[in-house]
Length: 406
Image 1 (cartoon, rainbow, N blue to C red):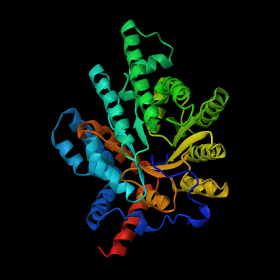
Image 2 (image 1 turned 120 degrees about the horizontal axis):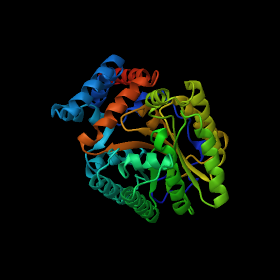
Image 3 (image 1 turned 180 degrees about the vertical axis):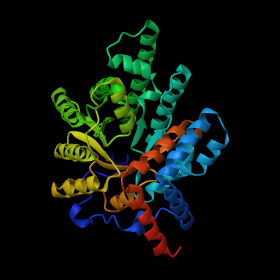
Image 4 (image 1 turned 90 degrees about the vertical axis):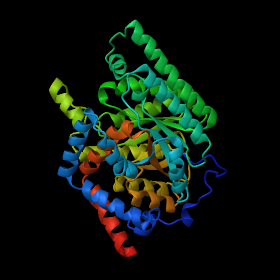
């Protein structure tokens, strides 16, 4: 996932580069002015309060249903500003350029999801192709992210997964979905831009995995273009990662894998309990961490054949990958070996990694505020759920404020 430039793999030699110091707040927050640092401090302090976030999220969802206009205004000047690149691609250019000035790449992600109207699905598909073209014109945007739920009605995926027959009308719409995603991936392949396919809830994920495998068979022959996402908080995903690799190896294409811990844990457990089936979620965090780290090592052991991204805010998993890269003498700039964090979060990880010469990117979400509000609410809720992460970042920001004397 290196930029489309003249850089060649292996140009960087590990022996001449330092081990990243994740406590170096000067590097971590070099991208922020004093004013921006203080604004981030105030926002994170609010988000570190679980009760406040839970209450605010609930009220925001209610206000959205009632279409109260002040919600978008408040969001735009607080968490949208922190976690998003802008309302459109051109808005994102300044963010992209700013990141690149600090040796950090950008992954574009149009924030729309769970659409159902045909017009909305077509608009999202056009936006995806537009993002691919935009990425191709930027050396610092090697990948765009795609939500299949923005391109197809969820119910069709659910029916496909449960092997329920589609109606004639649904078959027509599903065929249109396959045409949309293939058009986008064909364009990405032509222009050399990667496509991350996001993961969704378990009750539609298997159907999505089938689609993504077909896409990889078509477009990952000469290099990795399409990446599937593996949510390692599911107890079956390490096994699937291995199986997908062996399938790709036997059929002559390369596997693209983005590893994440997961985003729908409570929803998954509640649904499993309500419907009386075994939960797909790991029994505890230790099991998730174990499978996640085993997945990382599996990919690193086969980095020539697997293009992968360690998309995490977990410092221990980041350190593990750094240690493995150095121990295995893997070039830090190899296009198959990548780190990624969300825009607005974990700057102490991102910028210290990039300073040490590793391929590092920020996930830059964009879109009209009304379309990304659900993403922003989920972001706030997830941040408070990540044990110690928000407190750690807040502590580092406090340290940097003291260092600057502000």
